[in-house]
Amino acid sequence: GENVEQHPSTLSVQEGDSAVIKCTYSDSASNYFPWYKQELGKGPQLIIDIRSNVGEKKDQRIAVTLNKTAKHFSLHITETQPEDSAVYFCAAIENTGNQFYFGTGTSLTVIP
Amino acid sequence: EPEVTQTPSHQVTQMGQEVILRCVPISNHLYFYWYRQILGQKVEFLVSFYNNEISEKSEIFDDQFSVERPDGSNFTLKIRSTKLEDSAMYFCASSVIREAEAFFGQGTRLTVV
Image (cartoon, rainbow over all chains, first blue to last red):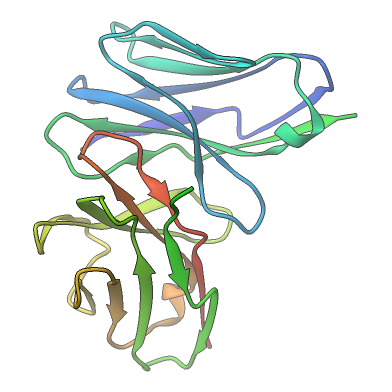
């Protein structure tokens, strides 16, 4: 099955700086890669996703890049704000599967 | 905005007891999932459900677990004889199609004592 690795496990940045979280996956058949933000006591909320036919996607301060050859994808948050502080999970699903494989999560702290 | 709702938010049960966790997926969604998250760990897949049957399940989803969609709106996870290691946050999710955004509920925190 798919194996998703995520780094770093914790990340602290100053408000206004950028944050980058990286994930790798093992199954070349994976074709959909969502990123979820989980705030304390809440369920994961989708913040951005990318499909394997696209190399980059941007939504305001958030962007995701995908390198299919290297089997890795990254989340980029620019101009970070304190409300960006949360745990972020990457995930992957392959084109015939029915489950998301999640990374281990990154706890992001934005210091005011 | 449509959302996935789960009840109860917190359930405490004694080891060996049966629990039923309830979920109301988003109404036009066709795929339903249960995931769990042990404190501080990653979100783990339990089971997916489509067209009134299990489409995929993980090794975690053994014979003590079962799922049901009893009335076309609710989606339940039953744990027949709870163990201490079943203590976790359980998330229900639903999606319109298989490879698409999965909306997660707020979770049910299960504590087995």
